[in-house]
Length: 109
Image (cartoon, rainbow, N blue to C red; front, side):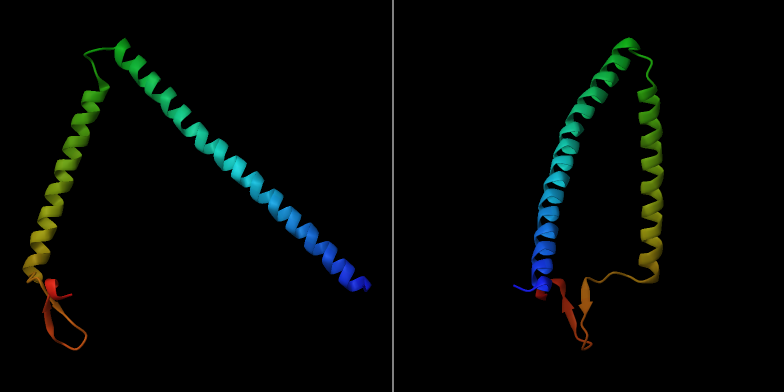
């Protein structure tokens, strides 16, 4: 075997071994990260329950909930207005215009 082929074989083995070790290392990191997710969620839930039981009745959560509902309602109204505006500019017929200029209904697609 020539020196060049020995070097190529050695480098190929080293790269392959490094790739295998690297993949196993990354998999282990991902597994640990995924395992931490439910643990963190459980901790957050416990803290939230502790906060709610410490201050029953007063609730920043109810004020926050009302604020979110108000925001969602205003966003919904804005979307309805935009839909009316765009339908006035280009009414929806339910027909599809094909590349050849033929009209087809959505059921024929």
